[in-house]
Image (tube, rainbow, N blue to C red; front, top):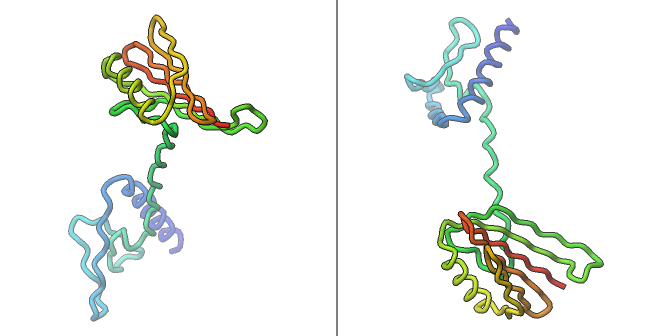
Amino acid sequence: MRRPLALVLAGVVALAVGCAKQEPIPPAPPAESSGAAAAAPADAPTTASTPGAAAQPASAAAPAAARPAPPAPAPESVKGFPDYPGAVRVAFSEKTEAGKDFPHRMEAEWTSADAYAKVVDFYRKAVVDKGWTIVETKTKRAGIEWQLTKGTSVGTVEVKDAAPVTVKVERRDR
């Protein structure tokens, strides 16, 4: 008698785990005060441990399946630089290394379907609005790069003219 019960219980657990990836089964209605078992919905899976035993909804017979953890929030953007609106971040890193001239470093990279000129205009204005000073502008064959300073920090913004447009931002802090 224990073996069939164990097999039925294992089947119910497997069914519950499989159903956890689909629509959740609504909770069983509370039992009536008279002590009689509540009727299961017609389409609910049922189990019976012994012949002649009352069938119960699978959700009542199996432990609730664990819910997957919510996705981790995206890492913070590079402090002091805006994300380009509508762009897709493809890389992000942040590290601290003691003993360096600039021990704290943050980098991010985005791609955008917008026109190169529109992205360049956005960052040219945004870095000044955020308090950065453009120390040097390097015009490249396939893009532009600004060397920036702000207090004890230095930064770089590079916009590459490609399909899609790529933006790389780096900030180093003392």
